Amino acid sequence: MAGLRNVSNLDTVRHMKQEFAPFLENVTLLGGGALSAATVSEILTLAPNLVACDGAAAQALALGVVPDRVIGDLDSLDAETRAALDPATVVHIPEQDSTDFDKALRTTEAPLILGAGFMGGRLDHELACYNALVRRPEKRCILVGEIDICFHAAGPLRLALEPGCRVSLFPMAAVEVTATGLEWPLDRLALAPWGRVGTSNRAVAADVEIVPSGPGLLVILPRRALRAAMAALG
Image (tube, rainbow, N blue to C red):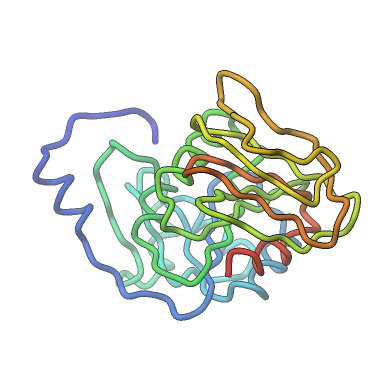
C-alpha cells in the first residue's frame, strides 16, 4: 500500500462486503516480498490453491504457477502480467485503508492459509501483516519465512513439537498467557508489546500447550515446525 488516500465510505463498505467463493482446500497466499521456488513448491503441496496479492502474481508466473485468484488494489500488477491472467480471477479492491495482505486475508475463505513473501522484506510491510493476523482472529493463517513461521494464537493451542524446539510468544496486545511443556513455563504471565514478552523459550515435552486469555498473541516457531503448527490450527 503506497499510502492512504481518501475513499468514500460507500465504496469501502461495498468492497468489504464483496463475496467470494470459498476454497475447499488449503490456500497458498503469495506476497510481494522475497519468494524462493523451494518455499513456494513446498507449501503448494500442503495448500494447493494459489492466491496472489497484487504484483505477487508476476512472481507466481515466473515460478511457473498460475494463481487461482489475484487480489489487491492492483497498483503493482503490471499490464503484461494482467494480460496473462484470466480476467475472472483478478479481483480489484481499490480502497486504500488496508494492505493487499489484509484484503486477501479477509476475502479468502479456506480451511487454512499459508502465506509466503510476507516475512523478511520491508519491516513496515511485515509489521502490517502481523497487525492483520491479530485483527482477523477468525482466519487460520500461518506466515512462512525462510527461517521462521508466525501465526496468531486466538485461543488455546496444543502443539506437538520436538524437544528443544524454539518457541517464542510475542504479544500484539495486553494478554495473560499460561503455557506448559516449555523450559520456562508460564502461569498467567502478563505480556504486552510495551512490557514483557516471551521470546526464545524452548519445548521440553512432546506436547506444548499455550492458553492466552484473549486474542493478540503471536506464536513464532522455526520453519521446520510448519506441519506441527498446521495440525494445531487444523
